[in-house]
Image 1 (tube, helix red, strand yellow):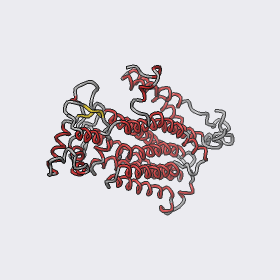
Image 2 (cartoon, rainbow over the protein chains, first blue to last red):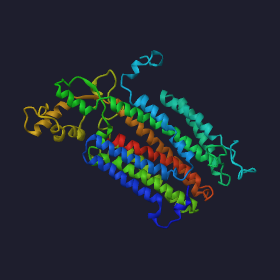
Image 3 (spheres, each protein chain N blue to C red):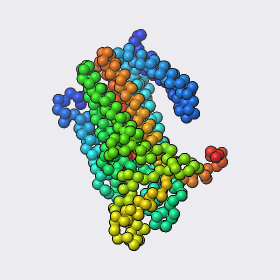
Image 4 (cartoon, rainbow over the protein chains, first blue to last red):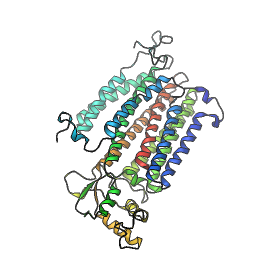
Length: 109
Length: 355
């Protein structure tokens, strides 16, 4: 962890404090997006965008991935391959998908 | 361990790894089997082995002064603390756990008809609603995000987790400055915020708060909100604020003039009454949506609970003077876990509470 960030006496020069403020502001935007009635697609877009910004803020700064060696970032991102497989294999299948599987990999009811 | 660094690890003080994680890993399957089969024997054995492993871990960690932090000596983690690498590998596996929940969420959310849409579709087609039960997806957000009060516990929890992430950073900063008093204070604040999170979670699930914040249980949103093949008595039905939300003038007014609740009726109050009357006959099987909600948020809540236990240990270790600038990284590694729990909530909150 980079100690240099904590030598500053001013909160507003502290990257962790600034990250904290940004997270709070984006959470307010997130909740506000639901309070303001918008089309579902627009709401989803706002929520996903805010989620991405918050996620990067937490992972890069609070979890130090920005300062740590790249190998840790690669480790953190490694599951994404499996996550994509999960989403394609499960997330976007139709309800009837399992009934088309061969008998040997189906649960018999 | 053969891949420890060399410079600081000579002599008897060198860290030789721990058997505790292996003991814990041996105990956890028993716990899971016990949960799945309701086998108390398995559960007891699993808890005993896991607790034993954690005690071994704790005993080793309490005596660790940080002067011989083991470093990885193999690529790609050369010269990175082994405990940090281990924590990231652990978090990687955690990511997979939550990803499976989200994949299931996307699958069912997109493939099962939404209950409100199905209701209007059935009414529009003149179907007889009474006497049948319809499988549909009722997102928990429908019950939670429809007004300020019901959204408040989840929203406060979001702020509590973000603030707790920052207070943990402050605890680490103070531990590195050997300020024991402030370290204890910030760790305790983090503990308090985590506890608040669980209290509000219980409020939202079971307890409720006054008339403005009914619990999900009191709204009928439960895992057994319809049992397969049985009577419809356990079916989920809209009532209270959710019913008003479904049968609001804006929902009905959004439809074309041929809408069943507008046809021949000019008064919006009559339309709303007709809608509520029809909704009363609409029985829903929402087990899948409720299961996804409770399993995902429950697993996240379990992680918060385990984090609180670890925080209690960190507070104890700090109060007994065992943290120093040399070994404050124990707090840093825990912080990685805690921030990850916050990161998961960043996805859980909009997906299950807002959308």
